[in-house]
Length: 249
Image 1 (cartoon, one colour):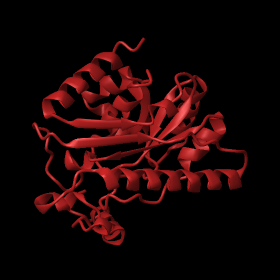
Image 2 (cartoon, one colour):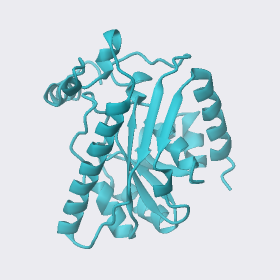
Image 3 (cartoon, one colour):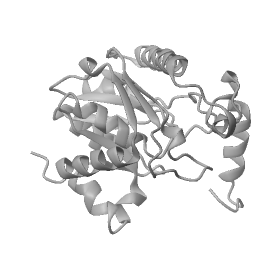
């Protein structure tokens, strides 16, 4: 039983309905009904975890997300995060959160991770951190490649949130589970395989997504004719905004 998570999901579904979001959820048969798994998700918007969690509920699973520790100090979000048994991450000292994730995986939980660590301002996949596959390797569970497209149009970094009735399509796809063998070479191979699978899924979603024009081109990668920053431009922007003397983050 999840006495906190269950009503939160219900509230989320009501909000999605009020926003008129149109979900296209595929590959739920790839989410195991029981047992541990690492759910690896691309990151283009602040609402990604809610859409990923909704897709997992189609398979009867609750996802325990790894999220920055500062959220736990919020008087509203903190108790909810604890009640839903999400996993706090201290980016300066990640060993404790890694151990907590392993424990959850071995206990049969699905743990949600963003391998890119931060939102991609180019809306292309960034380089993946190795912790995602290492977590699966240590726990002896598969990695599930999940991609979300459309989330950036609801609320993303550097753009105003649009939480009214927008009718935005949200595509969520879960691919075939990836097994991680033993040893560092196997982990590197699985990380490359994971990124390749997620790239293919994302491109497939983009190919069938409704055409974006006019002001909506800011939410489309430059590769597809949009006005979002290129990966190189996005990296430069991120570097500027994370400097110690930066005025904002």
